[in-house]
Image (cartoon, rainbow, N blue to C red; front, side):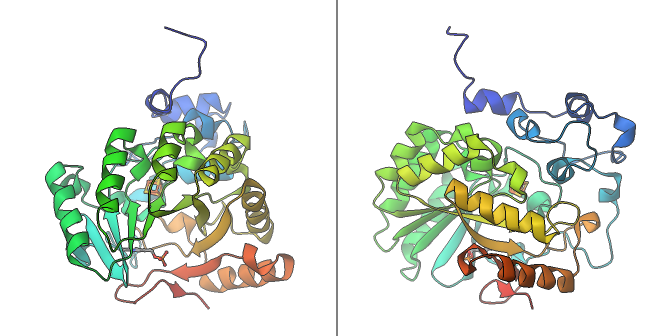
Length: 329
Ligand SMILES: *Cc1c(COP(=O)(O)O)cnc(C)c1O
Ligand code: SF4
């Protein structure tokens, strides 16, 4: 075996931090300077080492660390918080297939992710039910085939790029066989948290597809975007994909005009366009990340003064039953 070669993305994922004490030691930050951990957790810590490497050593307030550090406050549900805050359970077209909006439907491709984001609204989703079983996929594909109003398939999750290339390629090929589909969208945090996932084999699957490909990456803070991420985005663009980014507005992470401005500029330099800035969904136990709408609106106004219009993300919220994401303000 060639021990000098870079570990594969699968090896890097296996090697990710899963123990808070190990991450704290890696960051030279004593556990007692970090927020107290929850007593028990159904959503354990998960952080690839490459992502942890972009955190500032010795800084318990690092904005990347804050996104992934389990916090005792997660066990407290504020009155307005819900386990299914965006109505996912009521918009199923088939098991694991959600349609809320015209012309596009979203596949819950897998429950697995390469990082566990503490603010994530999917952490309470009943994934075991929407596992990656062949019969589940066959039913989802039938639903795409049966509805000629659908132009776009959105692969989401969890994270669809956690699938191995063979399984991913099979899904793309199946979607290509549905004549009325023209666009394949991939919502993934892997270009940012595990950029080595963007392999030449994956790029070949995308570049040889008849479908137009949109990749919506997910970075919340400019420090997430280093040269490895820029290279991954460049490879995706080289494969013909349009690369967008969505973020969530998070207290203590990116709730300042400087952070949001620098995020947009870093995305632009890396070749990705800011798309959405999401107001946080009312996820159980996420109150430490909440930003008041009025503050978010003020931040967006400040961004408009600082940046060209195409670098200002659309500030939106998901409201159950609405025909699109809803602009805030
Ligand atoms: C957010 C979302 C989409 C994508 O919406 P766009 O405005 O097209 O980005 C599609 N389907 C579902 C179920 C969604 O939640
Ligand atoms: S679905 Fe996305 S935001 Fe949620 S935990 Fe997984 S990677 Fe993070």
